[in-house]
Every structure is written in C-alpha cells, then in structure tokens.
Length: 337
Image (cartoon, rainbow, N blue to C red; front, side, top):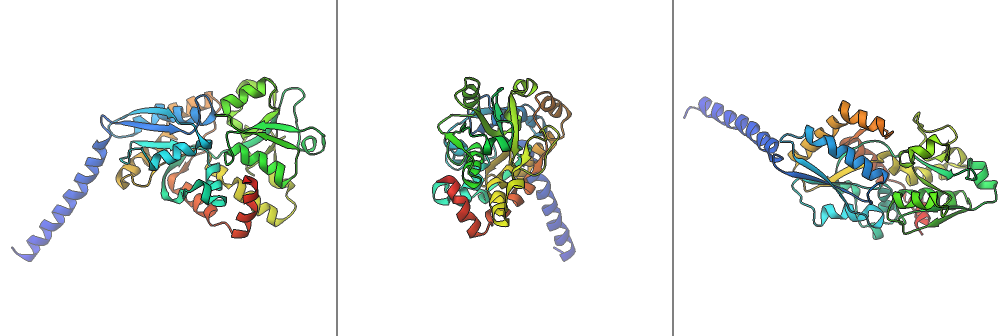
C-alpha cells in the first residue's frame, strides 16, 4: 500500500475512534441510576442541596438517568465519603455530598481520617459554606462582645469531632477562649435544631443557609460571627468576620487552615476510579445545572445560596490547604483533641 494511502487510512481510523469513544460515554447513562449519597440525616442543609441538585442534574446528563438521594449519616459524614472507596460502584453512578470540615481534619489528623482528598474526583461545589455562629431566642447571644464578656456559657451541639460546626465551636473555645460547651452525638442539623427550639442548646455554629427561614424572619436567630471574610448579602452585618479578632499573623494562618474547607462548602465528589470521560460528563452536567433557570428559581425560593465552583477550582483549593506549613498544622491539631 502506498505510504500516503496508509497514512490517510491511519488518520481516518484515529478520527473514527475519537468519534466512537465519546459516543459510548454519551450512551452510558441511558437507563442507569445515579445515586447521590448524603453524609447526614434527612432535613438538613446538605440534604436540601443534594435533593435540589438531584432534581435537575439528570436533565443535563446524556441519556437522562434516574437520580436518587440516599442518606448515609455517620461520623460527621465520613461514612458517605468512605462509601465511594468501599462499596460504591466506580463506574460514574455514585457521588456524595459531605461536610468539608473533613478536609481540614484530614490535614491535622491524617491517622484518624486516613483520607487524602486530593485522591478523589471533585465534581463541583454549589456554594462556599458561609458559616456563622448564632444565638437563639430573645435571650440568645447577639454579639461577639456578649459571647466573650457576657458571663454566659454558650452551649451548642455537633455530630462529631471534625464536623464543620464542631470546628467552628472549638475555634471559639480554644483559639479565642470563649465560654463554649459542645455536646456531641447529634445525627445531623435537623436534630440539633429541635434541641435548640426546646431550649436544650443555646444556638449553633453552622451554615447560614441551614438556619430555618422562619427563625430568621422572626428574629429568633442572631448571627454574631462568620468564618469566611467574604460576606454575601444574605448574611447580616452583625456576623463579624472572625479574622477581625485575630491578634497575630500566626493566628490568622491558623484560622485559614481551620476555615479553608468552608470555601468548598457544598462539595460533590466521586471516586477517582471513575473513568475520565464519565467524570467529564458529570462535571459538565453539574456546571450546567448551576446555570439552569429552574434550578436557580427553586434555590432562590428556598433561600439557598448558589455561588458555584467547578471541580477544577475546588481541587486547587484543596491542594493549597493540603500544603499548609507543619507548624500551623500542629497548632490546628489542638482543635480536634
């Protein structure tokens, strides 16, 4: 066969393969079920985000698979993350949303968490986790000054050490020596809210979007500190950035490690064993969902913020956090002990 004809034949076969392989990936999800595992019990903030994404992401996946949500609470959402490496299918039909406080815990307590979040495939983030601490009710704490100097103990709940609200509460308690008592063992934020309403807890540290809208409208939840410097319009000015109260560069660096995970606040990840072409499909579907007018309208009705990050952007943040100096990591470790 003449060399030119052979060259053209090879080029043609390569071009055909390039068309066939993506087509197979595009057809994969037809008739399949995509499961979104939620690391907490039903009714909380992470559950609400998962169910809203589940309603729309299937419309943006070729083949339009069925999308279901499976609640998988345990160990501050660590159970749902481990599920990806243990029993979850690795074919692109399973992902999870979890508490990003685990990212920080994996840095400061690698022997306990035993996960490297650089070794997961990050699908995307719906919004940074704009976390605040708030007092509840007419006698609840309303300001940082009242917390520090008011002479009253601030009792809050948490699922377990390493969860986001545990880190926030422990930051107040250990870094700033605030009179905070933390009660562990709650399955999720829904159970904590019930305890707050019944007067068993004084308030919470958690996502602003997880505070019941009724509490905000009635002036029952008093946000007095926040953990990300950026303040979106929905968070009141009374929630002062915690870095304002730092007294040294070392303390500011410590806060960065402790709160950096909040930047990837509503994260969706998959196993890194998922084929690259299927991950690309799910990432694009996620990004398209974040622009879907119907999805955005639903989120606006539920007062759930949407400030999305792509999977690539989330991975860059995680890589930066994982590179924190050992001296800062050592300081952060005290938060978990």
